[in-house]
Image 1: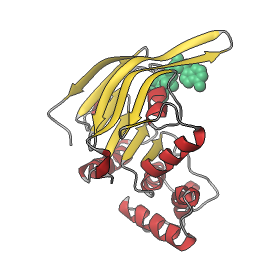
Image 2: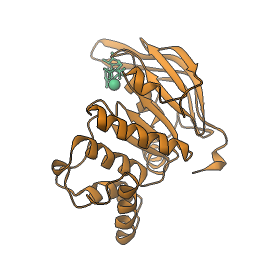
Image 3: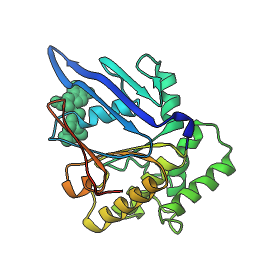
Length: 236
Ligand SMILES: Nc1ncnc2c1ncn2[C@@H]1O[C@H](COP(=O)(O)OP(=O)(O)OP(=O)(O)O)[C@@H](O)[C@H]1O
Ligand SMILES: [Mg+2]
């Protein structure tokens, strides 16, 4: 947690992203502006191809805008080098994807410990923190299981533990329940609720209205444009 970030954790000002593939240019995001306060739970919705994952890649410093300004915790990250972006990602942001993206040959705890390898954490501490993160997501009894020995919902919880192990203030999730049945979806959503209750900022991409309903704000994009940003009374 970083109270020093101030209350505005994300600020986008006329952010555009254009992909050029051969002679075809795709405007994936068009002058998108919005802000997110620390501790918010934001759902991002929109049709397939509307720019949701592109937006998440920019929010997560996996990619940079073609134009416009993106500030993360008050810092303009638009002009940073790849190494500087990687450092910010590792220190501040946790990612959860639809396809859990676990390494199949590694045990649950070794998968969870991976982000700590990049930050130079000593080996004994890596294991300790990985096990603690797995306990946090209710998998303390599965630390030595490989991904193939776990259910889909359990694999996604391992992925969430991996996202949490560096204690990031911002959690970005792209369709985290897209491959899960309704019981596992509920487990994962309850976990995200708890993480938000304990102060983490969450941005979650989803196609499903009942998943989006867990968030207090819903941002809709269509054709790369911000269509709507609604704050509801329900949610966290
Ligand atoms: N790396 C890329 N190179 C070229 N075009 C891309 C690239 N990534 C995305 N696009 C294009 O940008 C647009 C937005 O894609 P994006 O993946 O952000 O959509 P999305 O809203 O996440 O869709 P979905 O719901 O299907 O995941 C699409 O038209 C897509 O074809
Ligand atoms: Mg997508």
